[in-house]
Each structure stands twice: as structure tokens, then as C-alpha cells.
Image (cartoon, rainbow, N blue to C red):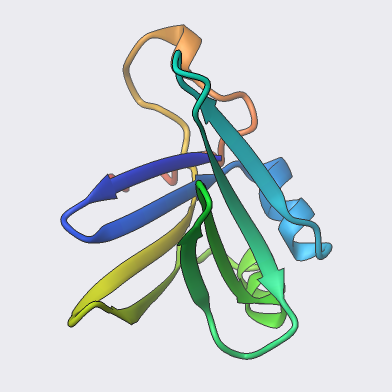
Length: 123
């Protein structure tokens, strides 16, 4: 799972295996460790409810979307699940997207589990 921040937008990109795991009800977790022994965890999980959520507590970013929505998304050609949440007088935009294979870039950054890119489509 990849995590990206930009202009009050949080984007999580997940590969094919991770999408299958989410559709089966499993959570996905990654960690980034820093030299000063600090760690940021980020978790993506299906929820039993019907409302998406996002939080940051005790060094953990946690994003959830309804499990039914994740299962439907996993079986579809849709690239992502998108939602907005009120946040400190502004709006946090959240994107959970299927990670498409790289068209260029170094080979070591290519994920063999990435989704194939549709012919003629760019992201």
C-alpha cells in the first residue's frame, strides 16, 4: 500500500493482492520508521458500518470504508473509492485507489501486483 498527501488530500493506493484482502474483510497495514525511533503506521480497513472514516491518533493514520463498498469495488473496473470528511473547519478528501502499473520509472519501483493499465488510459 502506498500513501500520499497533498493539499488536504489523503490517497492510498493498493495492489491486486491488497484489494483481494480488503474484499475478504482483512485490514492492510504499513509502517514507516524514522532514525529517531519514531514510527508512523497507516491502516486501511473495511468497516461493518455504512460510513467511511479517517483518523490520526498516536502515530497511526487509520482509514476505513464500508466493507460492502470495498467488496463491490474489488469486483468492478472502478479505479477508486472517494469520499470527503469534515476536518477542523475544512474538508479532508480521501482516495482509496487501485495501484496501476507504472508506465515509466525505475524497474525497482514497479510492483508486480499492480493492476494492469487499460490501453489508452492515463492517470
